[in-house]
Image (cartoon, rainbow, N blue to C red):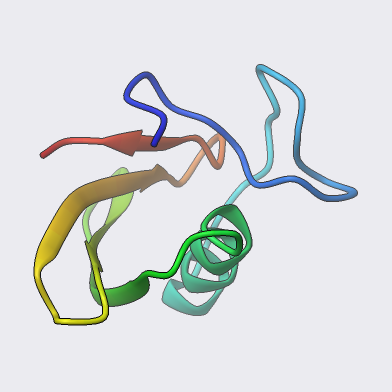
Length: 81
């Protein structure tokens, strides 16, 4: 996991300091699915806040592994757990 934040790999992602706006829960879910694509986890309970989206990352037994935020202005993913 990236405790100091990261971005999903892809045509719009992958470099430090990317500035991609994230405006909807669906966009946040897509970014998180891409970011965690090589891990066996599920993205749950995405909540919209003023400046970010907050999501729970759970394993196959539904245990909470991490709580992350996706910054709306930059797309940066950060652990807050």
